[in-house]
Structures are given as structure tokens and as C-alpha cells.
Image (tube, rainbow, N blue to C red; front, top):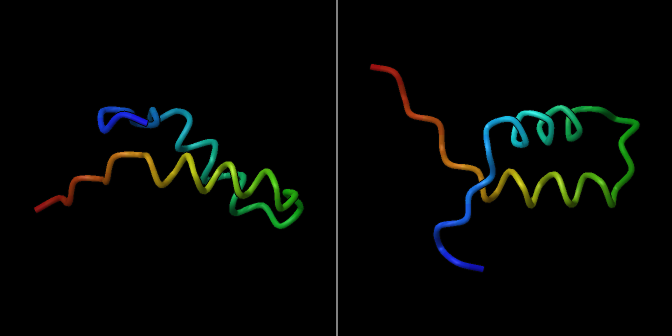
Length: 46
């Protein structure tokens, strides 16, 4: 994987929703967590 690959905000948002749902299967949560790991960090507001 190249260092420039990032998960889009739209995909990261959906992945976050999947992780917070207790009914989501473990294999789906694994993929969602992987996508979030590749997502850029949010910028802190000052």
C-alpha cells in the first residue's frame, strides 16, 4: 500500500457508524476499523 492512500470522509463516517452498531458482525467491524485507521486525523479547532 502506498503512503498516499487515505480513506475518504464519507467512507470513514460510514465505518464509524458500523463500529458503533452492536449488531454489526465482527468481520464487518474489522474492515471498518481498517478503513478508519487509514483515514486522516481530524484537525483540532483552536
